[in-house]
Amino acid sequence: MSFTAAAAGGACSRATRSAGTFSTAWRRYRCAVHAYVLMPDHLHLLVTPELPDGVARLMQTVGRRFVRHNNRLHQNCGPLWDGRYKATVVDVEHFLMACYHYIETNPVRAGLVADPADYPWSSCGAHALGRADPVVRDHAQYLTLGATPAERQARYRELCRRELDARDLAAIRDATNAGWALGGERFQAGIETELHRRVRPLPRGGRRTPSTSDEGA
Image (cartoon, rainbow, N blue to C red; front, side, top):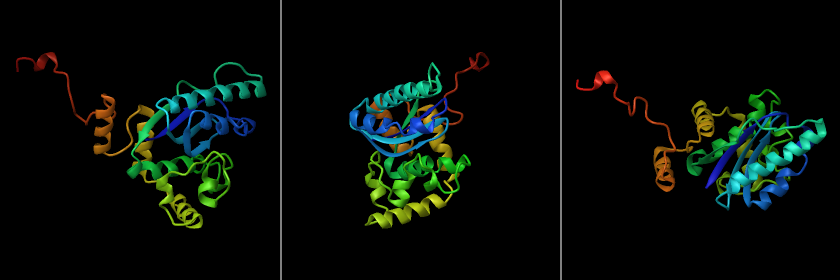
């Protein structure tokens, strides 16, 4: 089961980004990192954990190490992130590649680069150009893009040249911010059965508490 996770807060300096945080944390908590981007004030990850609490422990470790490094570098104190990280479970069949696209083209939408592969603090270089990245473990869904690495990279470059579908963009943001399951109704229903809780918003106009004027009408 794959998850997207995001954290926002203070500046993530270049030195912090190269501090090796991910290379130790994802191994320790057995999380396969499929895609990532480290932005100036937030980060996004697409991961598949082997342990039930793998995502939570990974994000806690990343946060603690970023805080220590950032505070030491800038002589600051206090927390780096604005509140708790946000995460959502992903429907692999329908949304996994959209999450790759969303995460790795984030610097383009932010106006930092024109080509996402030019941004040095993301996994796009590995997927689009074949650059070695010890953090990245490709998901099986990415491997279906082509029979060879060159074919997959070409297909992925083509994908990144297209603007992310506005409906997918909104769905990813809404699910991540609210903690909803990111997927179709069948997928969401299965997650609700497994977790015994609601993982999707109520339908528009759904469940209304009767007002006093309704009673006895």
